[in-house]
Length: 97
Image (cartoon, rainbow, N blue to C red; front, side, top):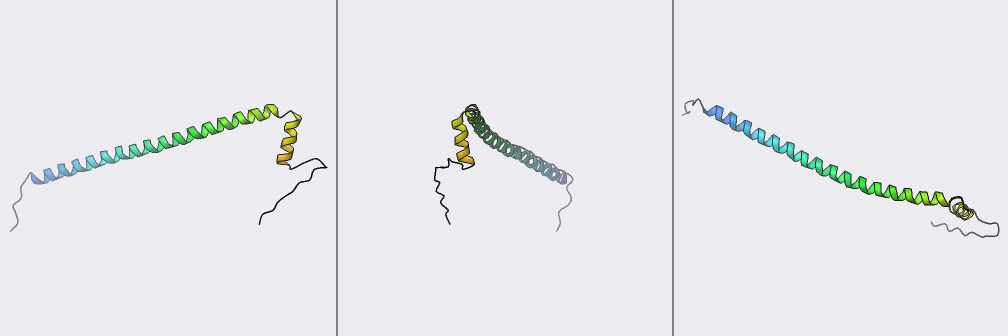
């Protein structure tokens, strides 16, 4: 046999349901915030390492630029990049298959 209607019971379930939804929503919001902060921290670490690498490359290029006017530096770059050499030099090229 069905129970008779009790007037305060539906309101209690509504309040309980809204409380659960609110707690879950706040937990989800703060949880995603923590994940976002972690991702941003990892990006910051990666960018800091990349910045250090770029600064090191810049200092290396500045040293090369300072020595670029010397004949030895021009000869070295011509040998390395263009594979040039003096006419009396023999170059051996190995082709790997």
